[in-house]
Length: 65
Image (cartoon, rainbow, N blue to C red; front, top):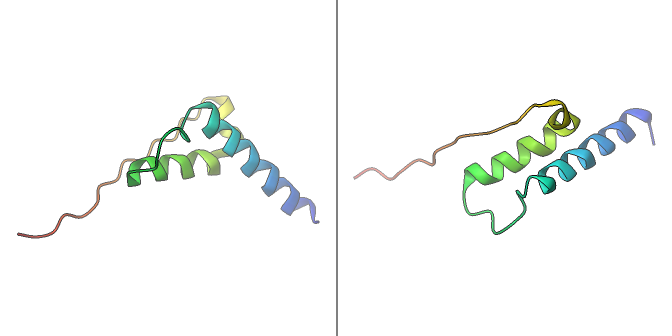
């Protein structure tokens, strides 16, 4: 395994742990906002431990009337 691949895996594991510590895995992922917040937290990885707090706001399109 290349060092870059290993660092990426470790980065994502740390991000997943950070999301778990924030309680993002509790309950179901019922909205796009919760799913993207989990994804952003996992991708931000170790940055969460230095004060970065990713929050994503998204809205789903509504059908026209």
